[in-house]
Amino acid sequence: MKLINKHFSPKFQPGFSLMELMVVIAIIGILSGIALPNFLSMRADSMLRGAVRELVGNIQKTRMNSIKNNETWAIKFNPGNIPGSYDIISDPVGANNIEKTIIFQAHKTDVRYGTGLAGNDINGGTFTGLTAPVNGVTFNPNGTCTDGYVYLSNSRGTVYGIGTLVGGVVILRQWDGSQWEN
Image (tube, rainbow, N blue to C red):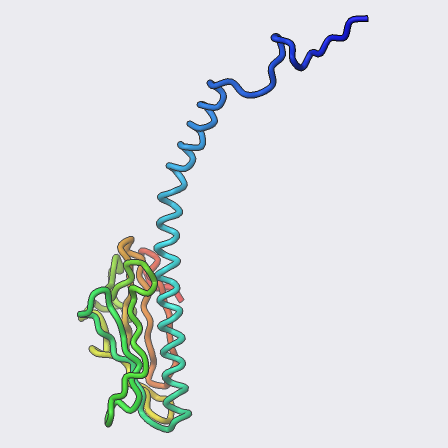
């Protein structure tokens, strides 16, 4: 009785040929080349959204601190600083204590002040500057504030407008390419 081990015979060898491996590597390379730019643009927009969420939270926190401490608080925007920053200030009328400084570079992206690809300001007019009011928003002890918007963008042209109404309401809008959306 002769035993034949077909797994080790020259006619049957398990595994992949060099050509099959090269085709798989080429397919992976092509898919990576298509996916990587999309991933990077999604990452840039995600970092911008993070900076916007942080700013909205800081505006709300500043308003609450103003009411809680019964004193004037403010957020001062520093558009001239590269990469951009803003200060949270307690009692800006008197001592001007800087409680916290937020620098956009902390988001490891190109978040900056500016209107990006937006065609008009949130109120429908032409842009008059990077921020309105020019230097920030001030909250009174009763929670009311100066009104206006600040615009944050990235190199892809994505733009968010973050604003306050006199009553202290915070508004967030994004430019969709043709108009501002809530």
